[in-house]
Length: 432
Image (cartoon, rainbow, N blue to C red; front, side, top):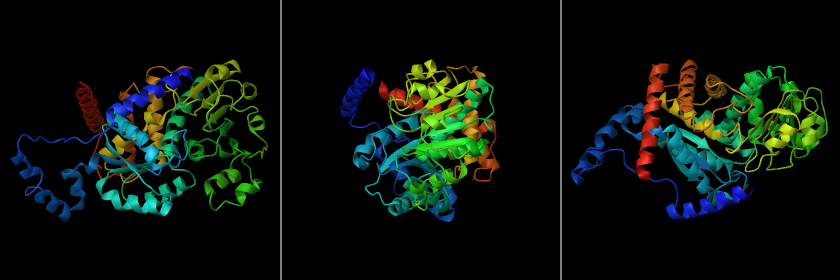
């Protein structure tokens, strides 16, 4: 905690010094005022006319191909909760910086001073002509499910909710390699998910899509294990339909109680609940099967310290922090995923594209030799974003959701590498 407090203190000073983390700089040369004859009036009328005749030419004549909006109402920010759109802006600026540095994506934070899901949907639809993709961020559930589903059906650009799809993608990537190390198959293992928020539900959905048995998944919220007799959820099933779905379809043995009952003989424990330590006890880990896998993903403090989980018998432990081995962090996937979907002009992001990203991440680590302390690459291994971009782009083409269909893996890799390296060089130049 002392280290964390020092980081907080330095972060505050840096934010005040730079007054934010992102700015807009031109990408075209301006050597004299007459250059604006081309960049603005009268020359700009020419690309306008071309786009008016063929709307898809907007990708050729503007930066729409690389623009992403990071949209949030600040209702569920990091581990801070409902702090609103003003206090949430530093987080979204940071997200934009990660987009640029790791994916070469020009992303803009857009904070909305409303919690009304209808208004959020309407605003995003209205501004969508400017952007090639939308990243929904830090929006509370069940609203986040509704907004994502509506927008995926109503606009023709990729919409992604990082708290759902990002967390699920990186969790799957880590689990693929963790299971490989302990020699277990995902369709056979018992998986306990502590937490029933947006991230947890998305994790469960993607694991099942990958081939996990939903009947062997047990999900736990603040009131206990999810099962069909949970009257409190049944009465609100029209509002919390995703949670009710888990009540009905998971936990085939109809186990009731708390984590203590759920975790008996579990092979995998994935926690995306509340900051610890002490949320998960060593006594709980001791009840797991041989070769236990524990992902304690809460930030800034995991639900159980890694060393405690190991002492209690866990074979592989991952957290959301960079100062421990095996960091499960959304930043490992979303820059590469958006690089891929933007480069093929995808119109959506499917579960299959998320799985392709997870497999690319897992394979990248496998090439370097996975171990108990290395099941997933770190953000420093920037080449992983190239692999993600390629596999996601190709999958979009295969699924028929890409406008740019005539691409190869070699072309996508080269393009992603050029864009990302240029972004990194530009940022480094600004620092000098």
